[in-house]
Image (cartoon, rainbow, N blue to C red; front, side, top):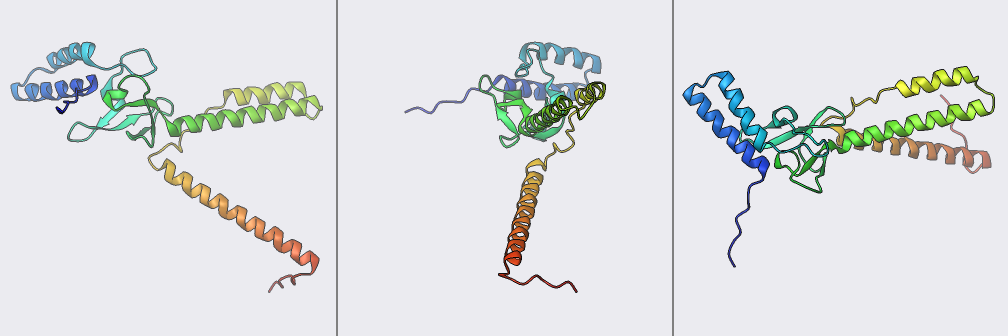
Length: 203
């Protein structure tokens, strides 16, 4: 059985051609405007399209590479944050080769999760305001003002960082600890009320 040679993706070919051109440009001291013109022609035919955007993406603007040319970070199209180009942070592209042949879509998991949480929070607050208006707890003009504030609210993507999952794990652990402490306090109060245990004396 013969070994099959893996065919390079369009993104990999594009990156390789750009790297080779840079070597030629540097060694031959090609004028900058000529370099830009040549790169533009190459990009027109070789640069892969951005997934889901229907237009050609400028890989230099939405990706970062290491010394070997491998894409290490992608600019999330949802949050506008630079994140590691790994399956932990980005969704796999079902069709095509993804950004620069990475196999990933530009929308990140943290970005999408943050956006969804924001929309859920806004929807909940809107419903609460409408419920208050229905019971007369808030005037109609005040309702409209508050609804407009919610409509104008902007999602906060500051939490979308390279430490996103580490921070989320810490938050989850802290919430679990608080919940446990609350449960113990409630159970202790019940036992004290029954007289099963004596209340602790304050010093």
